Amino acid sequence: MAAKILALLSSVALGACSVIGIRDGTEEPHYDVIAQTGPLEIRRYAPRIAAETTVPGEQSAALSTGFRRIAGYIFGGNTTHASIAMTAPVAQSSSETIAMTAPVAQSPAADGAWTIRFFMPAKYTMETLPTPTDQQVRLVPVPSETLAVLRFTGSTGAEAVATRQVELSQALAATEWHAAGPAFAWFYDPPWTLPFLRRNEVAVAVTAKP
Image (cartoon, rainbow, N blue to C red; front, side, top):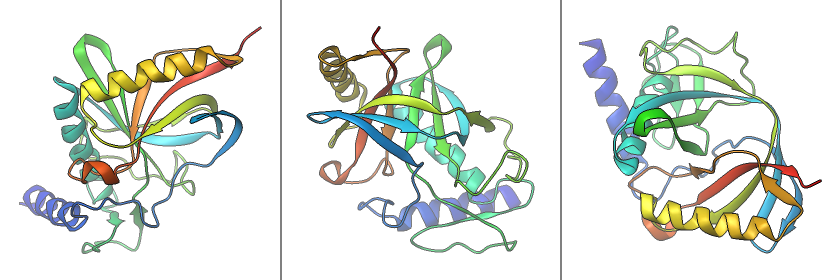
């Protein structure tokens, strides 16, 4: 019964975000722009923590499933029953609130699966974050890293992301940086946000060319 109530509350609160996104007042991981070439930014991110899950299947469907699975964690599916603060508040069963953050990250995993991440608010440590009750959700430390990032709006589908990743690679070739791993995607809004209002990004870890 508790699981059904949690799922209902999550759906109501997510629906309250409507089609206009969740970014108003939403915390984002801190970064410094250390170089810029046209629309391409080279960003330096500090260490942070992510809640992540791995979902098999088609890319867009995996993103939607992963989004809702991790939303369940921050809506109270954890050992302290902490719930999220969003546009429309949900009933809280403790004094602690896990705030919604952006972006949601998606990267390829093994065997055609996808790893989806929510970054946790900066005030938390691995010791102070509540443990997920869903064993498919895990907390992972993310070390500091330098990323090349290209922003875009519109579709978050596999074809659109692949096209932007090609553009990212082409833009990067003209700089003093080169890719140090596979590209991945970041989405700053829920899947139902109107495409032209979305903030999406493709990114890749980079190192300076010798």
